[in-house]
Amino acid sequence: MDVLYFAWVRERIGLPKEKVETDAATVSDLVAELSAREDRYAAAFADLSALRVALDQELSDFDAPLSGVREVAFFPPMTGG
Amino acid sequence: MRIAVQEEEFDLGAEANAFAAGDAANGAIVTFTGVVRDLATGDLDVMEIEHYPGMTERALTKIAQDAKERWSLGDVLVIHRHGRLAPGDRIMMVATASPHRKDAFEAAEYLMDYLKSRAPFWKKEITTSGADWVAAKDEDEDALTRW
Image 1 (spheres, rainbow over the protein chains, first blue to last red):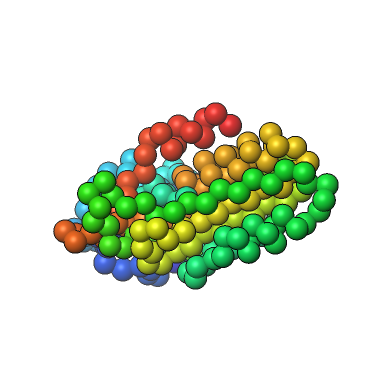
Image 2 (image 1 turned 45 degrees about the vertical axis):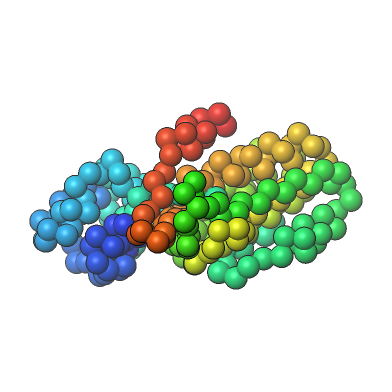
């Protein structure tokens, strides 16, 4: 699946987008997998309360299942307007 | 209904005129415009606005459609810019048209409240002393509970 990062999450991880091969069942499982990879991921995902997640461009939550999902995005709370 | 996510500047007068020239059944037109505000210290150089192409348009369309279901609205316009902006530049505008003033005002406030915390935009303030992402405010999230 495609995993996208925005704002300071993108800066901390150091890339805007990557393809991830995973069997993670939920968003939390995916976060745990990514965090175990490298420090920069662990740093970005250290405080999940400061993060939001979208699945296929719809706001979701960290307990949500990933089956059938093609695009996951992680970002801080939005500041539009 | 028109939703525009764009880097280029928009002409507030032309947009408002075109929007108001629609259906004469809409006796009330409300427009709101957001402008890049300088910091209290007066040293903001650039406001950089990042967004999530695809999700942004979907989120704005949903917010506008929800407003149309909730209030009697003849038309809705949302324009939101991204990229590098300077203090005083216009960031965004919303406009609502309704037969009734109350609907037009309330729907415009609703659009603004949802746009602040549910549309995937992120602002970064660049000053002479560095760059910082603008943190979301609790009061912006709390504002949604009134709807």
